[in-house]
Length: 431
Image (cartoon, rainbow, N blue to C red; front, side, top):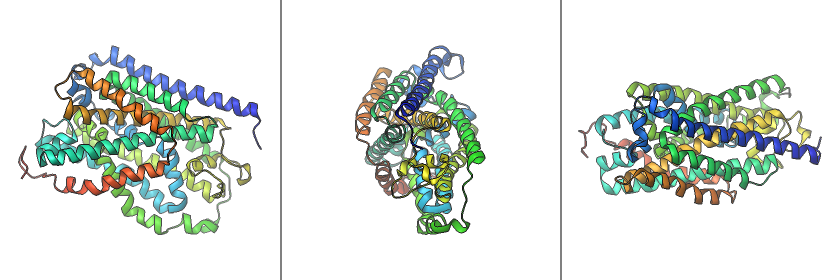
């Protein structure tokens, strides 16, 4: 049944009110923690006194904080659009390997990061390690690829949240993009990596709780008939070429994207010790795999239950079709409390992913070009980064094409870095 104009405006207002309230609450918590509580924890008070501390928070974070931060930095708003859409043509095989491939890179970073710290303890970034191992030319290439990769993913995050409000809520895209941009930039510039990790903990826990509520809701309300062997959609939902290719393509793509994400390497420097890093990475991997699998499952069930009209439905909104009561209910538009909850979930994950990327880009620039400059220069970098990316995000480019561009470049470069990393070479050597 079509919603009246009054109903539509009511859901729109409710969506904005709850989402912006959540975003403001996270930003306020970040600023208040930095101002009043950071000095009370061992190792944290020094993180805001220098540029190196601002971008690394070195040896200050526990296992659980590292795990939550890895999770929050990996699972952004893209999960609302990417895995559900992918599952509708790559089938259950693609859905499973998408989830597994999203978690595996975190373990890789955690274990390789331990080796990097052992052999090059003075490194403050991925570029520092590459400089010590391969020299200045390789470092320059790494900086370029890393900056491009993180900028692309940050653009994708802003585009995703803007697209959700434009296509699903029925608003325009720029208000929510501007709000996310201003709030995230403000607290990231104020507190650096430390405040990003602190807010990651709260954002990750909240997003998992909301995901659990949504999962229970779908389990309790989804009553569509599921045809045996997927019915007419067997070629899309069963084992197929796209699904089998995911066994290789998804791990390659997501590992390369993670290796060239300085935001992930920052957790390596921030971990208290080897145990905090390795265990934190393993715990995060488990949560990431479960979460991404569930997001894909929602789209998969919607397609299997006949709730998606593939000729007219927006691929970015396939997840929301699982909340429909029948295929005749039409295009997904916000009209239920659980859908507003999903928007809060998307905004929470979006903010956590963006602050990680902002810190990662800032770390890359600061550690190589502003190493001896005051901390104010690093803070200025955070602001400078967000403005052009927000502006481009308002053009509402294809999120899939954005991701493919970054993944393609990363996939071409990460194997020499990992294989030639010289894990057995002497400290500081290039041998």
